Amino acid sequence: MPLQAPLHPGVGPLTYERMNGGDVHQVGITTDTAGQRLDRALASALPTLSRERLKALIGAGQVCRDGRTVDDPALKVKAGDVFTVQVPPPAPADATAQDIPLGIVFEDAHLLVVDKPAGLVVHPAAGNLDGTLVNALLHHCHGQLSGIGGVARPGIVHRIDKDTSGLLVVAKTDAAHEGLSRQFQDHSVERVYTALVSGWPKPAAGRIEGALARSVHDRKKMAIVADGRGKHAVTHYRLIRPLGPHAALVECQLETGRTHQVRVHMASIGHPLLGDPVYGRAGRTGSVKPVLDRLRFHRQALHAGVLGFVHPVTGATLRFESPLPADMEALITSLTPSARR
Image (tube, helix red, strand yellow):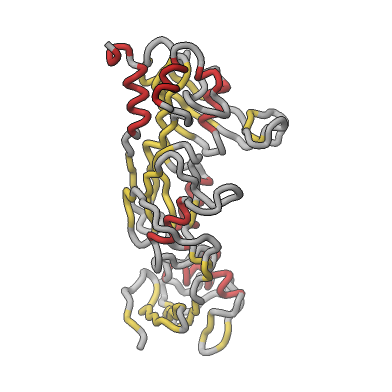
């Protein structure tokens, strides 16, 4: 028997039922939404499904009116129309669910925010086919994923390097994935990183702009390029305080979010991240090298400490902060002269 669901703005009573493992929704059109495109009217009634997902369902013959299939997402709806939307069960994800501990900072029906430890890969790829954040999320979110593009998988809208720690937002639903992706594309997401760098940046605050692309000399590295191949990238940095004569604590705010952006940009102005094995060779010179070796600190000293965005479904403004991990705190203590007395 269909279950009565809450009313949605601009639509009539919405009912749904489970059928063959999937969902069947009925959406009634009122005068408030009359005249809208079908995909838009359905998207306002079904907040867990994006317009793109609904367009695909319409194209696949999964939407009916009066028992007849409707295949035009641009169809203008009329008051009194009742559409039936069949949503097949999401296909299983390629990755395997694994019981890996997660630091969950926030979670609701639409998304979650994770505090990722250094050393954890975000997405399965060659060399890391399991033991990743995605594997952990598939286990944690079992039965909660409505299907990103029809597949039961977490929606990864941005990534953090394996050896960078900090905050990451992940979508559970198709609509949340689309809404978050749009915010990352228009650079409206607040992302602030804390970094330990070689030397003292001068000036103490500034803007680094340089398009990034794969290095022609080493495909594993990114490089600042001026040949039109790169993606526009901007980082704003600010010196928080010096850490002895050879290092500093720096805050980096991303205007854009490109692969290895902070690491490449800080290295480009002569202040690479301490411990960075790819871009930070200079950060292992002088008195800093013995400290890094003693602490066995062999990752880039970078932490995604602040993440802020607008909830793509509720519209609430969300902002999260993550404290520095223990290894970076230990490095700061060891590099601070007063702490070594």
